[in-house]
Image 1 (cartoon, rainbow, N blue to C red):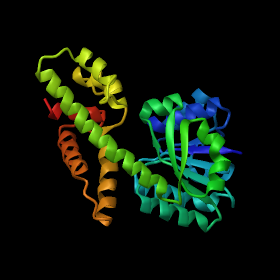
Image 2: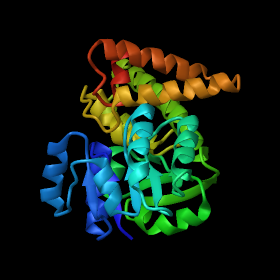
Image 3: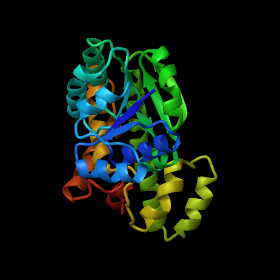
Image 4: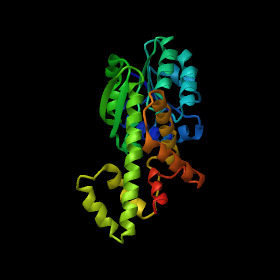
Amino acid sequence: MKVGLIGLGAMGAGMADNLAKAGLLSAIYNRTEHKAKDLSCQLNIPFFKSAEELARHVNIVLLCISADNDVLEIVKTITPSLQAHSIVVDMSTVSKETAIKAAAILASKQVEFLDAPVSGGVEGAKNGTLSVMVGGDETALETVRPVLEAISSRIVHMGKVGSGQSTKAVNQIMAAGINQAVTEALAFGQAQGLNMEKVIEVVSGGAAGNWFLQHRGESMTNNIFEPGFKLALHHKDLKICQNMAKQTSTALNLTDKTILDYEELMKQGRGDDDISALYLLKQ
C-alpha cells in the first residue's frame, strides 16, 4: 500500500506529519512547490513536481484541497496516471455534486472514490484526532481504514458517494450556529463587566459548554484570532451549504446571517482570521 498526499496547507501538512510517523506516507505534492520541498526534508518523504507523477507511484491518493473546481481539476489530471483499482480519498470540503462528478471521472479508469471530509480543524490535523465522515464503497473504506486511522480518532461510513460531504455540510451549519451563540453570549458577558475567565470556566462545565467555547473563548475575549479555522474558508463552506439547501427548499436562516457577517469581516481584511473573529461584530 503506497499512499500519496496532494495538498499541504495547514490541514494537509498536519495529516502528512501523522501519516509519516505511522510509516504510511510514500509521496507528497503541492502546487506551491517550496512547501512540498520543505515538508519533504522535514519528514524524509519524497515529493513530486507534478500530481501526475505522484499518481503513477502510489495506489492510494489523499486529496486535501480548498475548492470544488480545484478538486475536479486535480482528479481530471491524475486519472490517466492512476492504476486500475487504486483509491482516491478526497478529504476536502466541497459540494455533494462535486464528489459525485469526481467519482464518475475516476470510475472510467476503474478507480474507487471516497468523499471523506474531516472535522477538527488545524488542531485535529496536527494531533491526529480528526473526525472523518465517509461516502462511497464500504470495501474501499476498509482498504484505506489503516491510513485514515493514522490521522483521526473517529471514522464513520455515511453511505454512498456524496453522503460524506452532505454530513460535513451539517457540521458546518452547526459550527455557524455555535459561533453565533458563543460570540454573542461572551460579548454580552463582557458588557456586563464580568470576569470572562471565570465565565468561560463555569459555563464550559454546564449545559452550554462546547468545544468552541473551551478552545476559543479566552482568545476571542482578548481579541486574539489566530486561525484554527479560517473565516474565509468557513464562508466558502457555508455558501456550499446554502446552495445545497436551495435545492431542497430548506431554510438556513442562521447560516444566511453568518455568511453576511463573514462577508462584512472579509471586507475588513479578516478573512484569514479564525472564525471567532465574529466576536468583533458583537461588541
